[in-house]
Image (cartoon, rainbow, N blue to C red; front, top):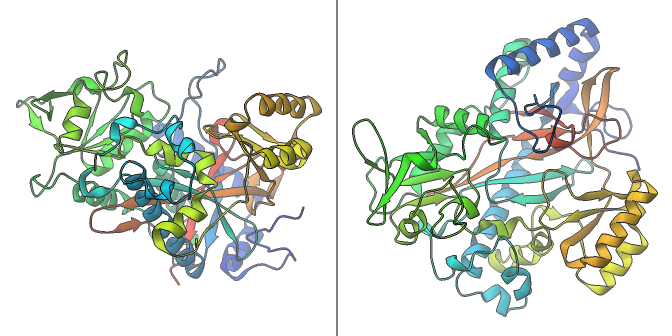
Length: 471
């Protein structure tokens, strides 16, 4: 299976978007590249960009590897992606509004009721409740892969608490510091206005009676969370308070923040805590991370939670398989960005096919994330395939399968020099009451191991700066 290379296509002819970068790479001595990579690592260590890997006994904090060769997209390529992203996130919001409301898509047979009602991300407490401005997913991270010059697929939707935007911003900053000459030679669309756009989005979804400048806070589980760096980074960039559950309290269904000048009312909470831990009175009674009474204040319409409670149902990989039908039902249009063809193992014929072809397929848990709980058939051992066959037979509803795509590659600086490595892309889509905002680009994740298709940082993947050419 020959992968499409985003710099060299399939015939080793440099594509127009990469001409200047290729020329620079050809002229750059290897020792300069090594020096720049070391400088980038030093920069990231100095500012503390690390993440935790739960269950890792060797090291509690790791530095996400950063590749110094950027990924380049043209303006027409980005325009197509942007149009598809807006369509998809609008459909996700319409779908969530419907399943917690009239459930027309279920009655129309677009998606089975049990796939919604039995989903771990479905929150029956949200049925009949409409969040401020009917927006459920204010911040979405849509994972996209590419297979040729013209074809992009959505790999999965992240509608709960998508992470990684801090790396998008820091990657750009370090590239501008280390390679100013490349920025002089290219017109690259900026990403540094993302915090402004996020703040505009959060303020736009405040309850209707909020002040002209609503009070927004970022709610974090605390410093031991794997994404705490990002939480503190974003709060600082947004100019809002970073709070933990103990910093907030609820009185008469109104949320307040404790300050040195007394209680201050809170209008919008950008929460980075999962549903289960948000409110011990409404969900997990053992939670010490959330705020007692928060869900009551939310349902009273006195505070906005971004993202809404119950959005996790849209993250489910079995629900993902119905997205083309969901998009058509709610928008009246075919999906601009296609799904990867998906076999639902809950269906008898699909299960039989998957069991017969495990060595050729990628099999994923419907509620899995981070690259865990998946089988990449062509790269799996006989024992791994046998173990997955047993798991599938035991719980077919818990899995989907997809063909092994020839994911595109990008030039990457590795120990042996510049070599192609597989990549994906996570653009961040912001849905406000006024409009949808997307900064051009996103977080490119790269599988640093030769031949690997798994880009997740927890599985050894790294990141790249993503350039969208402005001309």
